[in-house]
Length: 181
Image (cartoon, rainbow, N blue to C red):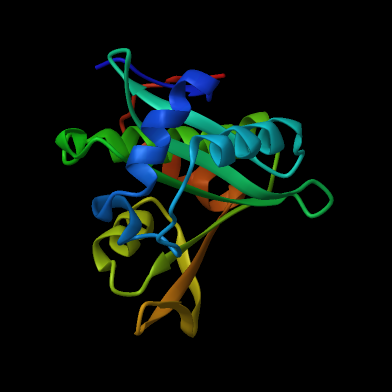
């Protein structure tokens, strides 16, 4: 398996737009957007000049399969949040999540030298909550009826892992180190 995170290019925008509007992706996200290529180009321009976000295409054997990001980058408090999705559903269930999760922890704690990595997950997505817990991320709170999509109200689980926790649990996992541009 050859997995890497590479910077998003303008050539990726059509595919990202397709993924981002697909029910298989939006069912786990806060929004159900209707996107345009013009809007995507503006988004790419904004993220490329922002100091508060980093976005990558997830590539598996040189095939773009999803998007990963770090957001809410707070250098003063040495923390950020992260999220990702596998847009090409044929690549789900192949163990990619383990490699992505471990590598993003390494990146945040070793490369960025941060102390805390956070994420938010719909409470209804218990599988992902359990996956994050497996790697040492802990539930820190519950935001009740935090997101409304259509007529449905969703609770959101807030989670976080500290550098010290990852330092002590990293050795429990076997994972390939990947390239992160």
